[in-house]
Length: 85
Image (cartoon, rainbow, N blue to C red; front, side):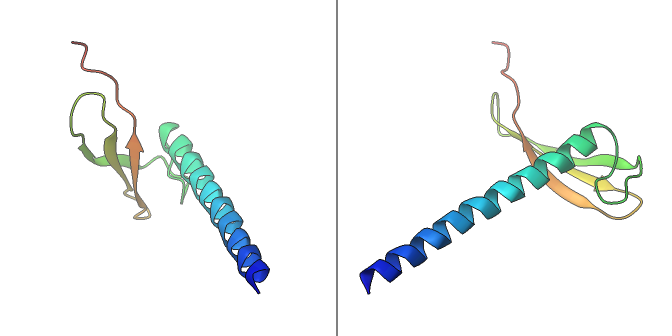
């Protein structure tokens, strides 16, 4: 009976890793499209930065992008640089 629980847990763990990897790949593709200036949803050149937040030097920025054509909205954590001190 214990081997079945172990196999089940292993399947759940592998499935979780695969799904999270796929999610990160999709986010990367969306951010690449936004960096080129196009909305990942409707492929129009209408993506704008709506909000940008940071907690300090060297910390990641939380940037919100929104498409004015289709209403696409997504938040990305972008690694910032140093303060130059």
